[in-house]
Length: 296
Image (tube, rainbow, N blue to C red; front, side, top):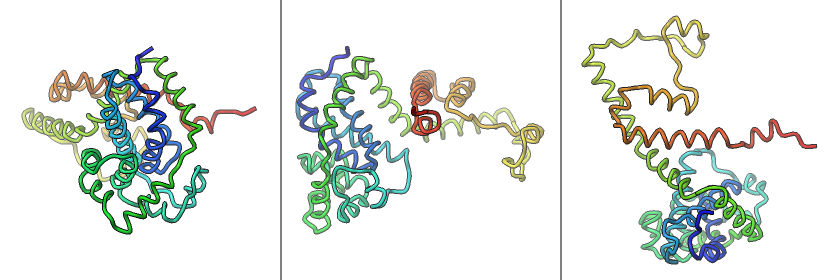
């Protein structure tokens, strides 16, 4: 079994309510919030230093939770739930008008108020959520006071804490989550620089075309989506990769892309994306459960 950092049980019981509050406040989805809280504690349990100090553990825990929530929000751009939708989640606390107003605040500010409620100083919050959000969380305005009141009202039933703790230890027993977490960190890091990698490849492709004297194909003004496969083939229209796996295979097969990015970046990027694809294809989604699961 992979070693869990020393004092994990104490950290978990002490900060579970605050992490659940942070994740719900930043996602506004109870199911996804629980999943992110689980991943947050999983990362603490897999801390590289098994004897991590309490203050360091607390900062690592909450900064990881904040980062995971920001990453989640960036990947799941959607309309925020209204009061009726929140009430439909059967939350263990009242969905008040004041809470709904608070949940309309910018993402970083919501997180900052939760961090302040958990005992972080303004300087510490600034390192996680930014100076503006940290300053607002410690301001003495009616709006800030209402936000603090809303945060205090978000109280989760701790009966789920034991179940989550058991799930975390079960995950450690199954595999080394330390490796899994490093892959997640790697993916987030590469996703942030992906636009720059894409720009570098575009520039290299343009220069390659100029050096080889290539001529762009003729313009197609028809709606290619209205064409059948034969018509597209006759016009030389090829389809982009339909899955992440197809995109990875195409990237590896392209000598120009691999040469532009270099062997180290290409190898690490492909490895991370293949693991991401494996995680996606083996995940049983809610749609699959609703479509195929038969209850007797």
